[in-house]
Length: 396
Image (cartoon, rainbow, N blue to C red; front, side, top):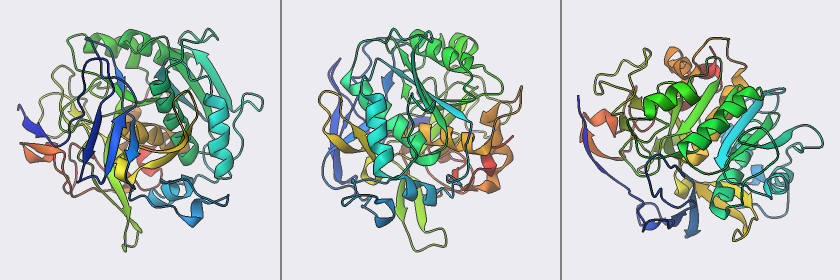
């Protein structure tokens, strides 16, 4: 069944320029870190930086290890919201981050973030952090301040959810799908069982070829952000082999959980035009692949604290976008343990739906059937099956 929709939030800009938008519904002004794609099969990162206004994600004493806390949610808030066993889990696991271009300050900035929140050091010297180019070497690409913000966001979210995980940063030469896909293969070849991808672009007839070349890695959990433009589908989130990660607004509440997730209006969702439906998806509104599978915080107005100092960056900032939720979910997979050989980890949440917090309200547009763009009981497009309640939903 074809789905028709109007997006609730669109970030648009002149070709080659980063987009900026302000919305009273969100309460903050945000800007895209990465320029919008200028041609087919070129990707853009899905990081949104708060540029004005005060996010709802308040400073919390539980996140403090210094006299002043950065704005935005820190590790203890995210661990509490999603019931994560981060103090003990993830030891020995490696989460790979795939992005384009180089962030020369990546390791140093990661050190500032982890020191601020009392997390163990993660450095090249102690074997926790490793950076390689898309071929596994050290011929790093040119630096780019926008993608550097994305890299910092990704590294910080893995650290927040899984402080004991090792981190492998793989930097593609440019944001073409071919180069980014080569970086994904390198991440897997380097031994990572968890690979996060916080980027996307328009679907194309080449996507099924990219699926086979870059994303069909049994036994490896590959997460991809669903997009930040509201209703609509991006690739590689549409790949049948990945876990497509949608976005929510995360706020404290008086519930037993203490937190509430609602659909974020910017989260991508919908029906793929090219990718076949995986066997574990049974919804009837899309003849092909449906996006998303699961979700986590992505609303910049309930955004996360990030430290980045490269070029135009000012240090502590607040970020949102599904670029926040994708690495967080990759880290949750790592907390759950190594996937079994031959398995497709994208299927795991579908076998453990009771181990997720269902997201039952909010929307990212108008569509038919409505579950593709509106939160509701059970599966829906923008939030998938829900958000983590511990790690059980991410085990084989």
